[in-house]
Length: 250
Image (cartoon, rainbow, N blue to C red):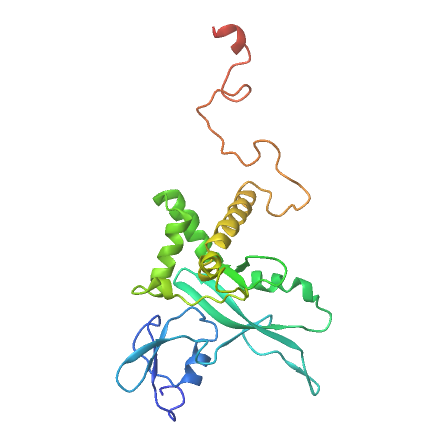
């Protein structure tokens, strides 16, 4: 291991520049702020794809990626659960630790996700989030390449597992029986519906920001408030003379 020089360097990262070799704990330490890098581990015969979560990576939300501090002799209470996070590099599963610091509202921890540039798919107890980068990519792809949401999500699944995209592991906490399996299988396997909903919210937020409504929560855009100005369209008071009704024959 190039970090500790003690354990065997069996882990290397395909996303980092250069060739590196770390042990499992050091790989997690190096990628504390790089949760979307793809890693592989030597199994004695070949490098086998693995994940930072399998190596023990825990994403600490609310303290800049470091564990919750200790006040006196008491460790601040935390809650740990698994989240599905969609990024431009693929679909990832991470164990997320949310800190419940004294004075914080446990119902507003989704705001901590926004501070991490993660857009939650729901407000109450979100288990899925999309990075700001992937939402911007989808916005540009839909504008320039006319990419549908389904095709865009299938591309992300290919980035995650090009050979077997249908095997992309995504958590599903819904309890179903075998009869209802086929009805719920697709919903549990991907986050296509969440992408549709979140991308609409993201597009609306971007438009509000571009047109000056992003920092004024008490002011809503009126009719045409989010429309682009067209200088070619005839508009009285802008590009038409005052006597246009008399001057021009309709």
